[in-house]
Image (cartoon, rainbow, N blue to C red):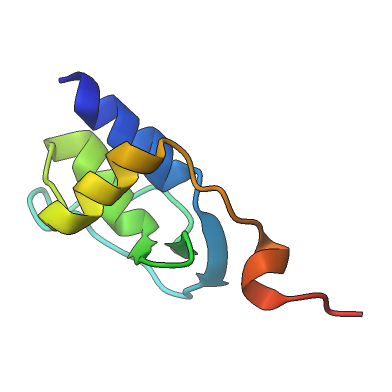
Length: 88
């Protein structure tokens, strides 16, 4: 469905706020998941690259309030500076 593509675009437009060391395996197939393990934010919600993987591959959905928020926003509108502030 069209809303799934919009949701994925939103999730991928998030600001990466942390990288997580480790290896992840697909819980359905047991195969290694080929992605960098990152945590994203839009200033209100946080989500992982693992969640994006499952939304894309299997159509699994996050919580309804996040979906509504993501679809109403379209794209993440904050920057790293908005989250972390000026580092200098």
